[in-house]
Image (cartoon, rainbow, N blue to C red; front, side, top):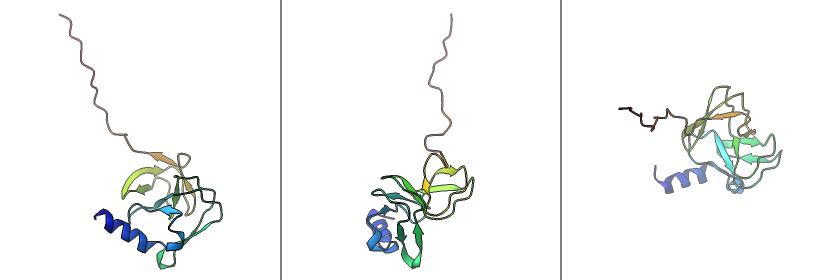
Length: 119
């Protein structure tokens, strides 16, 4: 999907009145990023009548859950798994290091150290 198509998808999915509150990067995402601080109790309205109330304050540039994520479940951003939930995360909750184990950069590392050979 090209950038402009993604943007148009996001624009159609979200109620334009609340579009300035969060960024949804990909249709598969189960989290959105706050474009400005979101106060506890703020109502976010999405397409097809979906509504989410912020269960707690969400700081600028942090994530808010768009759906229930089970313990051990995938946290999806950019259409890719970025971590796993270390406890159940309910819609509207702040998604951060207190409830997610990140997986970015956690691949097997290949040692670049050279073996020292003694003659």
